[in-house]
Length: 93
Image 1 (cartoon, rainbow, N blue to C red):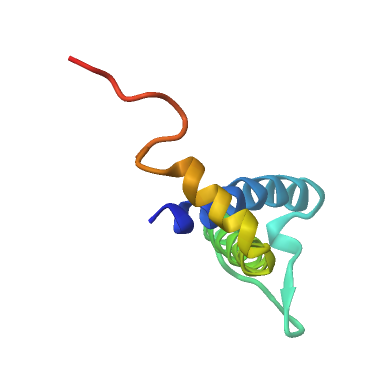
Image 2 (image 1 turned 60 degrees about the vertical axis):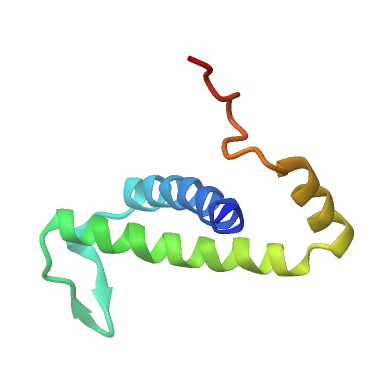
């Protein structure tokens, strides 16, 4: 499960940034797909755009994971070890 998070979380952040930059410069009502204007509501265009950016960024993160040397992957596995959450230590009650 950690491997999936290690790939999808950076892709999610990068897709958010890419969408902000893209839709700051381009109005969704002015987009064309295969020569035809996109006639979706703006919110649907933003949502589809985000999912497409996320898919592209996830592919990039996945390629990076596949290209990592085995030693680096092993070190990540050892560091992550038995910890379920690397962001903060578990609470004790």
